Amino acid sequence: KCRIGVDDYNDSTLIYDLIERLEPVCKRFYIHARTCILDNKEFNARKNRSIPPLNYPRVYDLCYKFPNIDFWINGGIRTLYHAKQICYGNTNKEIIEQRHSVPCTLCSQNNGSSSTQNNGSCTVALSEVPCNLRGCMMGRAAIDNPALFWDVDRYFYGESVNPCRNRKEALEKYCQYLEKIYPRRCCDRDDDIITVRIPAPAVTTIGSGGCPTCQEFYGPPSSSLSHTPSSLSLNKNGTIKAKISSKVIDRSLKPILGLFFGLPKSKKFRRECDKLSRNAAVRNCGPGYIIRKAMQCMPEDILSQDFIRTEHLDDHAMTVHVAPIMQ
Image: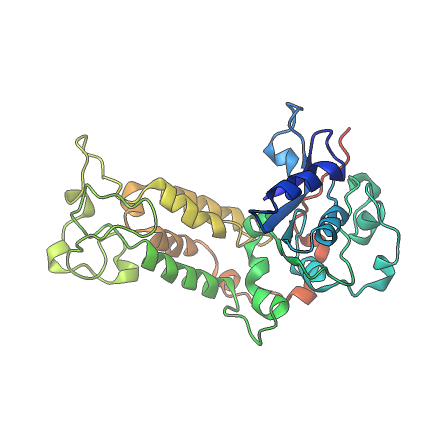
């Protein structure tokens, strides 16, 4: 995975030379269609993701110049509609027939942005997609507004239906997945074993059901676990021993923190996830429990509100990852 240029090396020569050198050993390239600014101390990672203009035509040129290499395009793709145009072909002939270049004023107009928001990015999709352009990447969109992807099976891949109709169903399936790969650690006495990665370590669970903390979801604790979790796992200073690492919790929660993007109480859900994740006793009940518990702070009508089909979404309400011209 690489960008199309670095600092002042912004013509096609640098990326062409790089791919030519790597072609004998590397057949897949994920191209972020921006240059990377490294010689400016004011440019942090966040600015580098938005301020340098996007140059999709450069990626298309790479596809034609290196027909035996597979490419994926990355950068500024914020809707499934845009992703589908890039991967399957643009059907808007009026846009395609216009003369696009970098800097480009046409793309900002077509995206509904005002001239003050245009940084010269060219994000035009071709009518005929190069056969070796295998797909695209939507990284920031997946973090900021993951609900976009509820419709990917139907809209993008052509399936008849999607697996979930609303956020409640999506979170329920995700909790089931987390409970499988990161089992609860509140009901075992293997205090020296810490869950830090997949696969989770094998531990001996005491009894059945949940602990007094999580029994509302997993059933009442058995008689062998009728005491509190703190009597099972304590540090020398008397605090509860965390047997699931914070990294496991953080990477489990990160994909769903933006699930309520644009809806009321979205920040409340994020705050509740953060509060619960910092509690060692709660953390031992696993990331699946944390999400189930955080869902309780959300009104049922929001949880059960049906997702909106991609073709019915307001494009202007999507998160924008194209910044204004740098002054």
